[in-house]
Image (cartoon, rainbow, N blue to C red; front, side, top):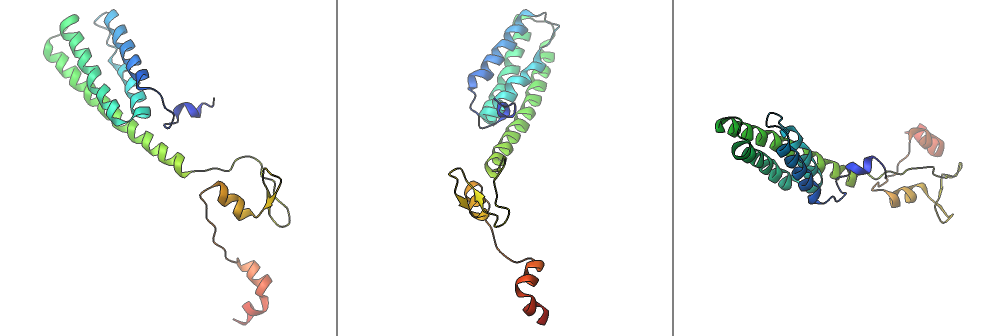
Length: 175
């Protein structure tokens, strides 16, 4: 598998991966001392959800994870005053929401780019004289037909100045 294919937004990764990563981070957070704040790692499941599942699920995690952390910090491991926990929860929610928006937009842009770009890759056997291309069936096709069938390119035809002189030299000189 290519490294780039891991980040292909068209690749379907279950939403459960984001939820599993979230649960793992919260579980580790529960077993670490209250002074160690693992909220920065909430970015990972939000990134996964935003990239592969869209803005809605990323925002759900952006709200849920700080809320769960607030609940832990307030009722299970009360270290600070509730007002500090509220401020931290709002801060995390705002930052994670911004990350969600950026990730979802980047994912959509990448999907559009993948749809718009079709690339001809590899070696293409082409006749040195007539410029026809040999396809997989060993048949020779005109260059325009070969490229048009394999991409979204459309050709227009015209004559460059050199060919115009070569083909219509006498006429070009008169006008």
